[in-house]
Length: 352
Image (cartoon, rainbow, N blue to C red; front, side, top):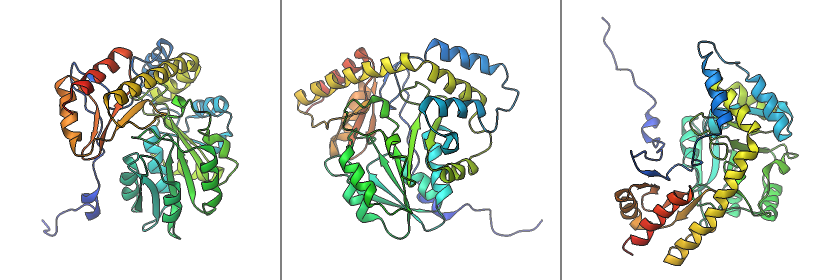
């Protein structure tokens, strides 16, 4: 037997933060992961059940039916489309497709917690630009761009704060970004936007350095299926497809995505109900004295600073699970009225 050094993994992976998912506590109200409350529509569940009959067979490697249906449904050229294992999977594929070791990826912070993780996994360097008043600082993003920057993530609405950038400021920002830097408009919560001055990222696709990222996890009630899509210039979309793990969009996900688009009217009605509840929940929290920024997502943000962990534990004690970012604040999903009432009662009884 030959003796030598032990097998090791990349040393830099020791510094990669774990992705922290929302807790699941038996018997509790779950408001930690921005899921759409209630099961997927019956028609979607039926499509999922039908798809399970052939799980002994590999899915279509190119997800052809799903790609065709998605392109037609959202009115985009199929050559500009890629689907993936949730929008987070596509975030990683975008970085892998664009970056080599030492390249830079710029994003606001705090924002979607996967951005720094997928960046470091791809051996690129994440550049965090602090939020201003809980919102993405577009001027700060511009100032952070260097000749090593390949990609900028702009979450709109921003997760976890729910704040937005509006049409004029985003247009001005895109006008100023160098043409060789890809701007990824992460619109995971687009379907919950009611402010007409928050732009639909699809309207910027005439720019070759813009990509629009969306998911079926939130508004389409398929968080457990893991399905997302990105629309970009054909060469970018082709690169994203090239780095995808083969068959990672599985047979059930492909069937579920098609069925969810067919059930869009029912699902968008549920999203509309959420936006009504969102107004009520935020107003109640503000009346209690919490500083809750205006939100266009399906969640609210409470910037509690050093009392975050204490507030989170208080909610857990009342069987309400939210998402805590220790030292910064908590994010609570807007769910069904009774779920929201339970959260509001927890907030009301928290010792201020």
